[in-house]
Length: 431
Image 1 (cartoon, rainbow, N blue to C red):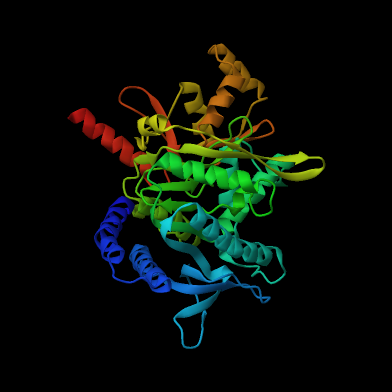
Image 2 (tube, rainbow, N blue to C red):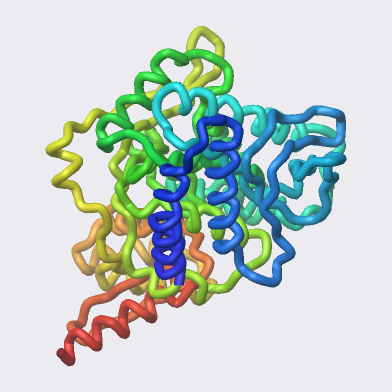
């Protein structure tokens, strides 16, 4: 479903954009209004019915008088304040689902301006969430999604049955960033036209970051979830929906892709709506194809000279490497061994699995298998995380299957993705 809607919206933009480009108007504000109007129309078409959501322009505010700069498009719920004799609104940050800054052309100068505009929203949000005026019983504020993402990325639980687990400075900084990502509005920069190549887009972002290294407002939480420049996009792997595990302690948090930008936009906004409203698995369609992330930026928290901050790595790629890389790949479940299958079954039954259990160690040894190897393979599935010697399920709905080939598979199946994959395998075998 999401791919079908994204293709439909892309067709609308493809048909309507030339009309805007050819309009005989030189007045910059009017030109801006045209592109913002097209973007608002597309966003309205992308929102699920029955949730009471709207697309407006205006300003974000908190309860203490702080206000953002003027914003092109906001996806909002609840009630806002219309400014007299205008079509602009002032809306409380707690009721803003997404913010989109629209540019006719997105090059380096426009990227800088839009980045700063969206950061003004982030500053208000962060102050609101850290202040005393936050709504204490807001249903959006469950930590569970961020704790699960943290466990998938690190293989470690941040919260067990007894409460929070002691984390290192680096781990805690990552968890706090994921929490901010969960409760903050989805921030998007939408450039209708832009860089002629993916590599040029990547270089522009890298150069912009290098000029601002060490400045306030350039940690991973400050980056928009999505930046679109014509055919190419930069997206954030914050677990909603895209997740990348740590590599030697580094978080590959920003990647580029030539995938349909409107599909990415829907993925980010609908994931946020699913966490708030529970859209159900059917909205994602088959969901058997996943984006291939071409990592641009990796980061890790660090203390240097007693000060905390983020270290950033830029991953360079030439045109040849980007052209050769796949855009998407077929999704498949985890193929696991019999020992992992037995232990995952035990966890799914609510039984305990401990890596220091003498009985389990003896059983694995009798099969010629090392306990540490099995533990590591289980963690690599991202269905399980560790808390000391305990292994715990982190999947919302872990399911297992034995294929007709005798192979064992396991996957998160809360949206029915594993069921659809197995059905597809059966159909292919018949063909």
